[in-house]
Length: 257
Ligand code: MLT
Image 1 (cartoon, rainbow, N blue to C red):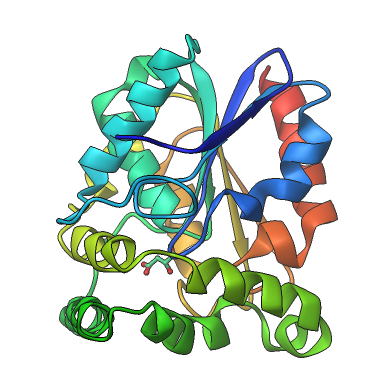
Image 2 (spheres, protein in one colour):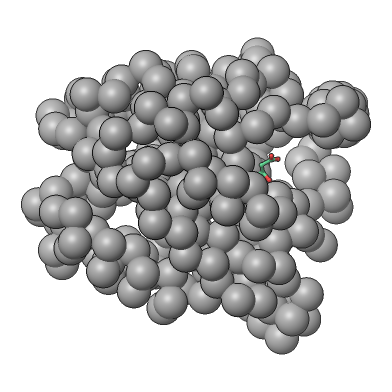
C-alpha cells in the first residue's frame, strides 16, 4: 500500500487519522501548532487524498494495518493516535490489534457502535452510485450539508469550498471501499472498558452525523477518558473551531506526556 503522509517535528509521536471522505488536510491547523513540540504524522488513508486507491472493501482492520506498516517504516515508537470519525473506527481497530504501539487515544466525532440497518443500506447505495457514475459527487451531495454546523457552512464559504474539494477529490474506489468497510465494521463497545491508556474524547454539540451522546457513552465506558464537548460545532471540529480544538489537544498531550 502506498500512503501519502507528512511527518514533521520531533518528540512524542502524534498520529492524526482523518475521516471519510476527507484527507490529511483536516489536521493542518493542529499539525502547524503541534510540530514545534511533538512529532506529528498525518497520513492520507488508502483511497483518500494522495494515497493509493485499490479496488475492494476497505476493512477497518486493513486500514489499521496500513497505519501500523507506515509507523514501522518510519521507525516510530508508541504514539498518541487521534482518529476523526472513520479514523476513530480505524483507531479502535488499531488499538485492538496493536495496543503496544499506542500511548494514548484521541477519539474525535466518532463512536464505538455499529450502523443501523438503514445506515448500512445508505452506505451500500452510496458505494453503488459512486461506481455507476464513476464520480465522488454523491458523497459531496449527501455529506457536505451535514459535515459542519449550519452556521459554519453559511458563514465560512472558503472553509466550505475547501471541505467540498477534499470530498470531490476522494477516489471512487475510496468512497466505495470505505463505505463497504465501515458497513461491516465490528462493534467496539466491549473494547472500551479494557482501554488502559489515557484517552481524550472530543465532539461537537451540533454534530448531525454522529450525535455527541456517542462521545458521552464512550467517556462513561473508558476508564481513563476525558471528555471535551465543543459548543455549536458540527462533525468537523478540527477545522470548525481549530484554536479551541488545538488548545484542548495540546493541554492534554502535555499532561499525559
Ligand atoms: C466520517 O466522517 O468519517 C463519516 O461520517 C463516518 C461515517 O460515515 O460513519
